[in-house]
Image 1 (cartoon, helix red, strand yellow):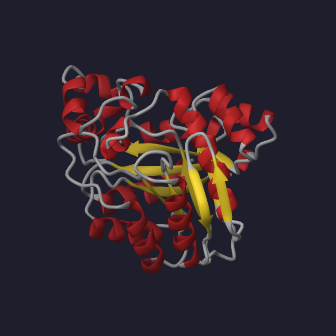
Image 2 (spheres, rainbow, N blue to C red; image 1 turned 90 degrees about the vertical axis):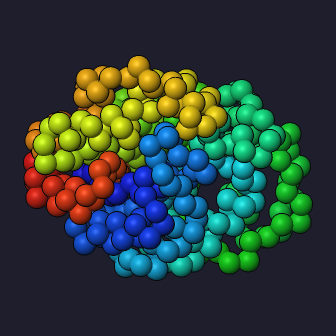
Image 3 (cartoon, helix red, strand yellow; image 1 turned 180 degrees about the vertical axis):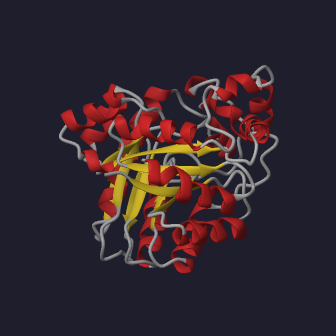
Amino acid sequence: MARYGIKLMSELRSARELVDHARAAEDHGLAFACISDHIHPWLPEHDHSPFAWSMLGAVAQATSGLDLATGLTCPIGRYHPIIVAHAAATVATLTDRQVTLAVGAGERLNEHVTGDGFPAVDVRHEMLEEAIVAIRELWEGGWVTQRGDHFDVEDARIYDLPERPIELVVGVSGPASLDLAQRTGADGIMAVEPDADLVDGWADRDGDRAATWTEVPFAWAPTEEEGLRLAHERMRFALPGWKVMSELPNPVNFGAATDLVRPEDVAEQIPHGPDPAAYVEAVRSFTDAGFAHVSIIPVGDDVEGTLRFWRDEVAPAL
C-alpha cells in the first residue's frame, strides 16, 4: 500500500510558509515531507528558494510524526559530499523519525553557481557514485580519508550521528542510473515518470519495491480555468523534458524555453481544477507502476484547500 506525503516545493514558498504547510500536511494525515534542494527556482514567476537543510531542521522541530526526505539533493556541485553527509546526519539527530537522503546528478540551474562548470552526464554519474561512497563511509562514524578522481576526503569524521540509520535513495530515469543505484547499495530509487520498468528494473536488481519514490503536482482550484492558469504559470518548466531541464542555467532561460508552451499543453500533463477524478488518475498511474511513496505538490497558494481536497475527495477514491 502506498504512503503519501507533501512535497515542500521551495521554489514557490517562503521558509515560514513551508513550515506551516508541513504542519498542515501532518494535520491532514500525510506521512512524510519531501523537499526540493535548490538555490535557484525554475521560472521567473517563482519567488523563493530557501535552504533545504535549514528547512528540514525547522520541520523536524515543528512536527511530531512526519518522516523527512530530500528530493533531490545533488552532492557533486555546490555541495561537497562531506557537507551533504554532515547536513543529513544533523537533521536526523533532531528526530527519531525516518530521514531519507535522495541524491541525483543535478541540474545546471543549481550546480553552475560555484563557477566550476557543469560536467556531461556520464561524468556526473561517476561523481555521484564517488560521492555516495564517501557519504556512506562518513555515516559509519569513523575517520575517513578517500582520494578519488573527483573528490577528496581527508581526515574527516562526523561526530553527531542518528540512532536510526538514514536511508539513501538515488534518482533514476533508466538502466544506467538503476545500475548506479545497485552498485552503490542504495536503499531505494526516486523518479518522476510513472514508468513500471523503473520499479521492475529496481526489483530485478534486488531492490526493495517499498523504497520507491515519486511526486504528483496538484493544481487544485475552485474552477477549471484557475487550476489551468496555476498549472501553466508555475509548472510549465517540466514540459520540455529532462534533456532541457538539466541544462538551462537560470530561471530566465526556463522562461524563454517555455514561451511556446500553451495552457492546453499543460492541461494534458498536470491535473488541475476541482474535479478529483483527474488527480485520482494521475496518482494511480504511479501506484499502478509500483511506486510506494507519492509526494503531493500543492501548486496553488491555497495549500490548506489543496490538503482538504486531498483528504476528503482524492484519498478516499484511491
